[in-house]
Length: 275
Ligand SMILES: *[C@@H]1O[C@H](CO)[C@@H](O)[C@H](O)[C@H]1NC(C)=O
Ligand SMILES: *[C@@H]1O[C@H](CO)[C@@H](O)[C@H](O)[C@H]1NC(C)=O
Ligand SMILES: *[C@@H]1O[C@H](CO)[C@@H](O)[C@H](O)[C@H]1NC(C)=O
Image 1 (cartoon, rainbow, N blue to C red):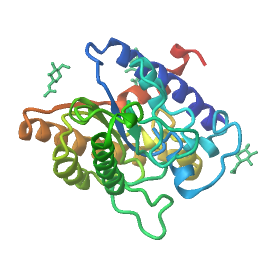
Image 2 (tube, protein in one colour):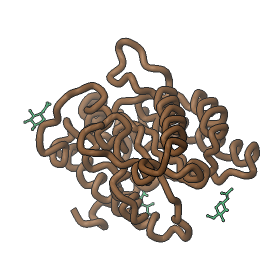
Image 3 (cartoon, protein in one colour):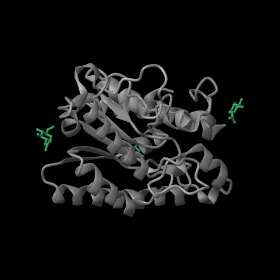
């Protein structure tokens, strides 16, 4: 139970901190947001894509259902940017509007290609392919006349929009991140990137329950040391990638968002942030 509470507290405060970070950020005048990722930012994609029904309360109190993404940070971020809810690419119900962007994130997704055993078939590469199709289709519709304008992004939004990436916690495959990003999104005209690093995986309740039974495996925060070490190694690769991209593409803005530090602080110092 204790470990479950950890997660609840951490989650609430993460939203708060990200929200503050967004609010303090000087220039957030992006016309659209294109998001790629996993359960951290899924707004209904996996459920729509695989056709399963979510049970209430959609993960708000039960972490076994948190992958519904019903309370993901993305909702708070777009809200702070005064943007509408970001519709999931695969959710066709209820007249989705993609004018301000689209969310390709699917819970359980990985950077490496999915296999038959994967929870989620919509890996990072697939999400980027979906984006490429999305963009091509939008350009076709715009060329077809005015009537679709209020449902899809304007052509220049693909260049001026913000591309957010929050993926890797399900496989920590940093080396494969780069190719998809450089070759595909940049080539499609993406220039503004927020790359989220991965959080302290060793502090996830499910990992503490499974790997932390032997308390010698836990660090001073009560989190599984080996998992946090793996997350840190991945994050070093990701940070190096951001530096590389910066050098390689001087006309792009690449922001490395240190989620690990934000979440670690919240978990250690949760009492500073209410409950
Ligand atoms: C999730 O947990 C809740 C409460 O512990 C339980 O009632 C529910 O059946 C669980 N759902 C799944 C899908 O395991
Ligand atoms: C990068 O961001 C800054 C500030 O947000 C902006 O002034 C600049 O035009 C951006 N550069 C590109 C290439 O988008
Ligand atoms: C917790 O808060 C203290 C005091 O502000 C700070 O020094 C420490 O770094 C925080 N812990 C983490 C893990 O960030």
